[in-house]
Structures are given as structure tokens and as C-alpha cells.
Length: 377
Image (cartoon, rainbow, N blue to C red; front, side, top):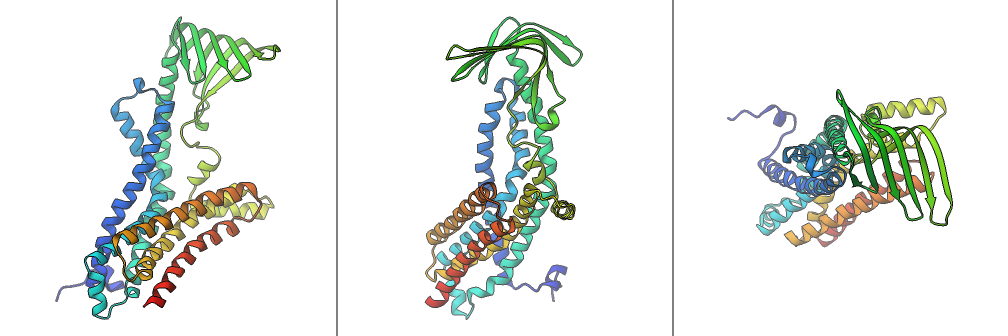
């Protein structure tokens, strides 16, 4: 007799369980990859809007895009699991495998165990990516992004030429290298707004890396004047000793909310407890804690939702499975992601009373499909 492995000793698995897990896991990899690819393609636009192609090699672009994968992965895996389940049961249906199983007395409920096992695995992968892989790769992404952004700004500062960069026109009379630094002399910057024209003059300037920890690129200007000419004829003029011009942040900042998103769940929970003990309430900390917990819970809700599609439609086919899955995914994004953010910003409702009832809507959708299938059967 063939010896069972340790996992099967703890959780006995039938051949049907193993067949489901292998089939669905392949679909899960494919589905999650599609969602990640869509997010990454959106990241291409953000990168190219901020960094000049002249300063980037093809390898650098690929490196940046690969480093963004983990930041999209933990959002993609729960919904990828739902689509994977829909594809699996749709595949079973069009190949008459569900019908064959039913003829032997099997019910859809039989799949609850392997569905929950896969949900637990995806939940663990989501947690590892969200709390460990994403914070590490995002720091590398920011470092590479800022380095290439500095090169882009440096290329816009050329001797005795007027260069358009973003909403500015930049002119530098002289550039003097000094070690790793470059100093710019007799700098003139104009910014043409809808109701004003800003003109900045500086005797000297340099790119300041001290703001890098805030994901800001600063052109620091020394000893100059700043004038504003309004369209209604008013003028304002002031002299300064030091002036900072901050250029675009990279996509997603490392301060505020995103730094909290890169904080582990256990540390966020500790911060919430400490805040409550001290009598201070930081809504952003509480929000990030329950957002991350909500994503882990969503892994199980999406897994059950995928199974409920098979239960709710006795005459299931691939088209019905895909349409139902996409509807549930859109429900998740519109309610859990968009509506929750609106309620958090616009109201003072406690965070748990925002997230978990909204997640409950996904559970109710699954329960509705399950009841529909039970009545039909």
C-alpha cells in the first residue's frame, strides 16, 4: 500500500479533492496573474509620466515593473481565487463531470473541504505577500524610481537652454559638478498657471536628496527672488534665502497611509491598543488594520462564493460561471474598496462597522446563490 504524505495524514484527501485542488490552483495562478498584469500596465503609465525614457534602459523598466508585482498581488489573489473556482466548476460542467459525480450521489457540498483548504492556502500567501514581500520590494521600487526620477530632472536642467519640464520652464546659466553633486547657477524657473505667472530666480541651486525618505525630489534654490504676476494686474515679489521646489512623488507615497499598509498586522494591532490606552484614536491606523484583516477574510468569502455559483446554477456552463464571478468581483471592488473609502473619509463611523458589514454583503450574495440552488434541487 502506498504511504500517505504528512498532509494527507492530518487532512485526508480523496482523489476528487486532489483533482479539484490541482485544477483550481492552476486557474488561480492564471487568474491572479491576469489581475496583476492589468494593475502593472496601469503602473507603466505612472512611471512614464514621471521618468524620461531617455534616462531608462529597457532592463530598468522591466525591473521597476517586477518590483511593483507584490503591491498588486495581495489585492489580486482573493479575487483570483473566486475566478479560479468559477472556471473550475464551469470546466467540470461543460465536461459533464459534475453530472457524472451527481449520478454517483455526490453533492456540491462535497467540495466544501477542498475549497476551504485552498482558501486557507491563498489566505496564507496573501498574508506573506502583504506583510513581508510587499514592504521589502516596495522600498526597492522607490529607491530605483527616485534614482531615475533624479536623472530625469537633471536632464531637464541644461546650460543656457530653456527646457520645458512638467508645468515648468527651466533655464540654467552654468552647471558646475562637485563630486556626486551638481550645482546650478543663475537659475530661472517660470510656472504658467490659469490665473497667474510665477517667476523664480536663484543665484544657486542643487538637487536635494534629504527629502528622499518622504519620496520627494527637491530642487533647493538659494538666495533669489520669487514673483507672482496675476492676470488681474496684481504683482507680488519677495526675496528668499532658501526655497524648495518639490517634484512629483512616485506612485504611492511611502509616508502616511502607505507606510501603514507596509506595517505588519500584529504591529498595527499593537498600535491600536496603545492608542486606545493613551486615549488617542488614529483612524488611519485602525483603517489599515481592518483593511488587511478584511482582505484575509475575503479569501474565504471568495472561495465560498465560487462554490455557491456551482450550487446556485444546476445547469451551470462556463459563460454563467464567468459572468457570476465577474459580477461578484465587481461587487467586491465597488463596495469593499470604493464605498468603504468614501465612508471612512466622509463619516466618523467606527472602522469595523464599515468593513465587516460590507464584507457581509459578499457572504449574503453567496448565501442567496446557495439557497437558490437548494430550492431548485
